[in-house]
Length: 55
View 1 (tube, rainbow, N blue to C red):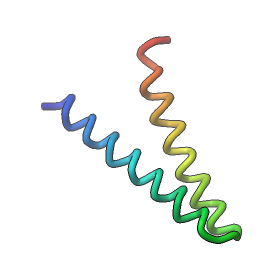
View 2: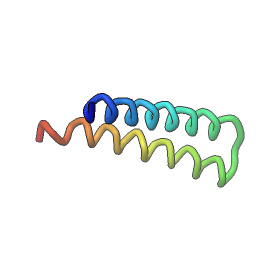
View 3: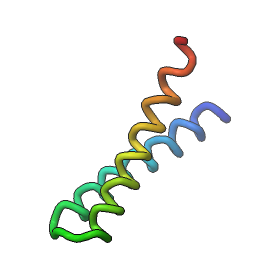
């Protein structure tokens, strides 16, 4: 139960981060750059969390 819930949460975070990046790309500005950086940070955190068990 715990594993499937964790996978679901990570999937939702992944989709949300992709949406942030896509929304930020539509226009140029400091706010949009911040939104894209937030999405990138989320994706990098997910990648770190995935690779953490192999280090």
